[in-house]
Image (cartoon, rainbow, N blue to C red; front, side, top):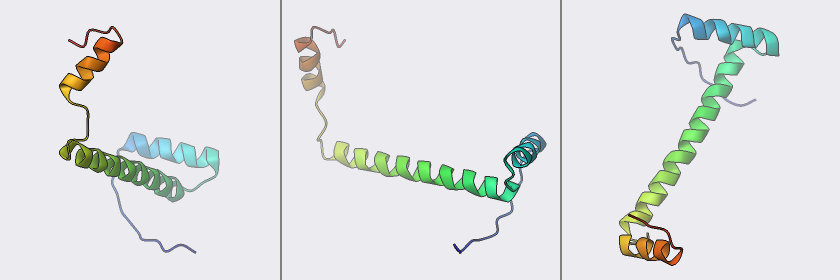
Length: 82
């Protein structure tokens, strides 16, 4: 069994009612649905923040194309880059 922790949260009444209905329809407990939602939220945000940090490091090293390089590429394709 995976280790778990208890967390108490407050949600608005409408969300609690929707959660209750979803639990009844799916046969899952509200706790299980909330745990899954939190897991997916954390997973997605972890991925996004890691990607942002990686891209910022690349930008800090100056590895992105310069404005002039971008304009030249657009010009090559016949697009007005502004």
